[in-house]
Image 1 (tube, rainbow, N blue to C red):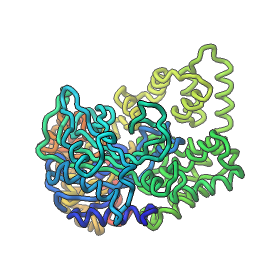
Image 2: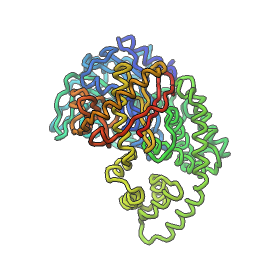
Image 3: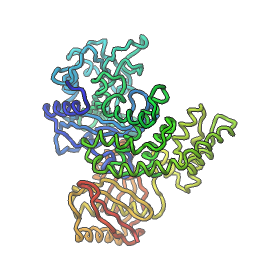
Image 4: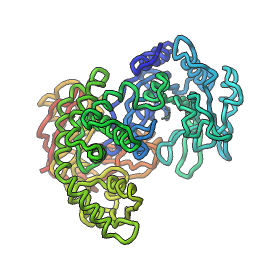
Amino acid sequence: MIKTRKQLIQAYLKFFQGKGHKQVQNAPLIPEHDPTVLFTTAGMHPLVPYILGERHPQGKRLVSLQRCIRTGDIDEVGDDLHLTFFEMLGNWSLGDYWKEEAIKFSYEFLTSKKWLGLDPKKISVTVFGGDGEIPRDLDSAEVWKQVGIPSERIFFLGKEHNFWGPAGKTGPCGPCSEMFYDTGRAKCSRKCNPSCSCGKYFEIWNDVFMEYNKLADGKYEKLKQRNVDTGMGVERTVAMLQNKANVFEIEVFSPIEKRIEELANIGGETKERMKSIRIIADHLKAACFILAERVAPSNLDRGYVLRRLIRKAIRHGRLLRMQKFTKEIAEEILKIYRRAYPQIKEHGSFILSEMEKEEIKFLATLEKGLKRFEDIIKEIKTKEISGKDAFDLYQSYGFPIEMTQELAQERKLKIDAKGFEEEFKKHQEMSRQATEKRFKGGLADFSEKATKLHTATHLLHQALRNVLGTEVRQHGSNITPERLRFDFNFTRKVTEEEIKKVQDEVNKNIKAALPVKKEEMSFPEARKQGALAFFGERYGEKVSVYSIGGYSKEVCGGPHVKNTKELGHFRIVKEEGVAAGVRRIKAVLE
Ligand code: SER
């Protein structure tokens, strides 16, 4: 019987390996090739170039388990199903099999006694109902009928439910067919169907038929090849296999909840308490995984998301009357995942100490901040908290805007978010672009020094590839006005001689006064032109490509200088290993 997370993962990989799929690695949560995107949100992200037509070294049939972070639904966390961190199983056809085989594979895995053995009578499916542009997916419906799902359990739904992607405004996408398990609850109304969230239908799997590329003008063109991209949520499926109504009752959550209840000395008897317990469990788990990528809490980019998650958990801990607790909870989380994830084991002490540091920092201002919040709402005459007050809570008490927003919502108040943004901009003296970026979830440093280091990073990336080999790939990048830090995949120490070669090559290109040119284009076009690119969540939008003379070309959000001669002298100050197969270079401009 397949019941647990481990059993499900093993079974899924084995099933698809038996069908000629090769297992691809569980990619880092930080998309490998991009210093500007935040997190891997689905198993397909690391595969985008191959969906667009590049040849994958492992072939046309792939299978994986992928860790994911999604912050889009963060306000839903606390209900039965939504999670910030989750694991996703998936199988892919890159221009190989199509709808018939994909659906037959899914059906066999779900219903065969050798695999999940679900009762076929309890399975309902949805298929794309069509619109003016993309036809109704009669082919998929036909295959579902062939395998034995009767018409009354095949639902045709619109684009909002049965069309996946693109992740950004443009990029690969296509109609999808989702599979649901009937929990046995009564229909909430005559109209109840799998898109309803009443709890009757439990979504377990999504087969996406990616054959389109959405263009900037909103039109769809056919991709070079037809791909299948599927995603099965591990936590949801395990909950279903264990007959649990929510994901928090399965083995990757219950010990965490138990520990929270012990520390709080109360259980989740009320709806509010239950919600707080779930938020703490989910957010601290996501935080542990982000920390395992060696990201620390900060006011920038991923560090800011991490800070938000930890601080929100701390506030909910306070609602449960817990004092200091994050380290204890994190210890429980590490126990669950240390075998499955080497990076969780390897960076265990970093995770715990950073978590504790952040908690101590925030606890120093939390009470005072909450008091200030109460004073603010006593004073206000309208139903809106001004941007200035929200900014004060952020600046003086470390309240992420999202937390103030949540506090306001609990009192049925609003926040002048625009006003906050303006205040923020005023105080940080940042460009409009930087501020906009921040409100999309990240904050770039646009100072002159940082800008120079951005350009130096591109020169370094190319020089490393020239000196060490093109297998060198960017793993992460972090820039402060003082220095650049560049992580890349490489399996041994870089010799002093090689360091010197790289440094000399960068300095040669600075002296050569190469012009830096920016062009906007679609992601597929950028790939076609050979730009080094990121395969992350914003791949589908129009991207900026920066070229430095004929020497380097990268997809990047910038900012960059106009000419390399502005950079000065480049010096590598340190080269070290940070994880298995990952090296780090720190360098300065002088
Ligand atoms: N990309 C699709 C999803 O995330 C299928 O993997 O649901």
